Length: 228
Image 1 (cartoon, rainbow, N blue to C red):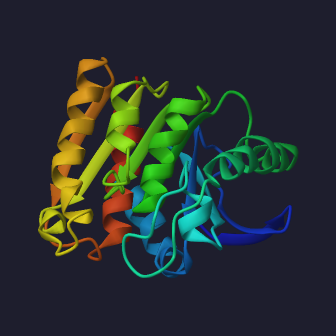
Image 2 (cartoon, rainbow, N blue to C red; image 1 turned 45 degrees about the horizontal axis):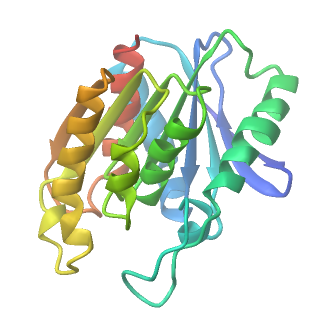
């Protein structure tokens, strides 16, 4: 599929359209994700026979726009903000309204939300806020985020299917907060399973910075192939 760029409410968005699509994939991305987005879409297409379109929104302030509440910096000096709600509002109202008006999205299509790293945490969090997304793909999600697992233990997502993955070296990080990610994602998977969510936890070779486009594609393809 050919990539098209557009601007919606001042935000750069990128679209891959299949005119016969039954599913719309939505993904917050950073500049690195954008560099490998063509490859990701190509890999998804090779792993599923289900037709889909994909729209990606570029996130300018990664630590603020994707996190649900403020938290101190874990690495570097940049703290986390509480901008997730505004990002979700942009997706559900402005982005979807615009591409619906353009004939790219309609109410008969299933919505799948996915992301990598903090965008994976955002995708998970969004599934607890709205029932608009039928499935969520959280690849190497930042479930180490302060108070996240406590929140997940007290809440239930609306998504019917949730894909989780992690690199097998991620929990060996030197940062003690980030090293918690292995236990956290195991707990996340346990919680989802107990709540009757159609879910899977896959382990990939390598650390957090390996094959992000392949890991993301695996997540979306699993959702497309395992819808309930």
